[in-house]
Image (cartoon, rainbow, N blue to C red):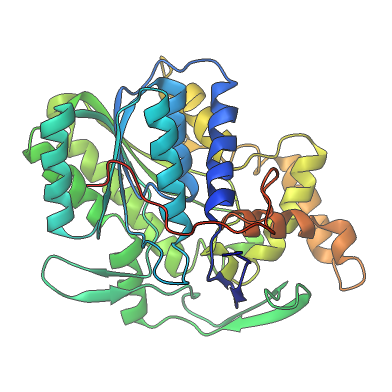
Length: 394
């Protein structure tokens, strides 16, 4: 069938198998164009099918030559419904990794569940023995905890309602968005879903099972962003959850003392994701910062950041962290000259100059590329087989 993008609100309900495969191939080519990284040899990526998790897996395999196990929750095609982009991404990664002679297996399941944790541990014991890198890169709307309670996350401010200009995802025009303040139950739910509790549970399970190497490193990803988004992000429910992730890193460091391991929170740069498209002000800010950083020649997407993280932030003699012990991959985004220009544009942007002072086209190009659309070298008028199998799926 011919696959076209179908947008509903900020969600694309279709994905293109060949476009996703080419997108993965492009990331692989980028990593292979860089110097080999003397880093991880056996990596576990929890949340490995899209975004930063996928790029980390690619950088680990093709940059370090690592064997990798990925954990994701994606669905295959069914009838005329395409598979999710993460399914196609995983299939493409597995194929390319196998071609290069790298071990690569994936587990499709609920990463929050004890069942998936145990299945992962069993696979590590059977095939790898142990892992030296564990990356926690989950993004989910809800989580069922071990006691059987299901929590949902929300993107809301805390304390007072929030109103900001943003980009309407349906019309691509400037709009005003308002969000009510979160309730205490919503704050708690967001922390339960997006905080660090499950990261701790994963590391405890892996540690108790004896499958962490001496000196093992574990990473979780976060974002801080500029002042214009702090009320809805850093100071909102998501920010509260990310603070919990940082607190969890400290607790995990205590768990890893016996094996001389280390837990880091990596603060990444703004990129286009399906989740971030739903946050008021963020699409507009992202469009502005893209233009500023591209003009300065310092723009990075997920793969550029993850390759740089492994090569320059983690696997170096003395990893540089900020005053809170975090790795800062947003160092270029938060440069004074970048943020000063972003603030200037934020104040003057209007319907008449939106396309001129922002990189709106670049934003939408990245959004469609998440689902395999708008990728060079792909014939979107051609029929494609949407039923793609994943090799070595556990």
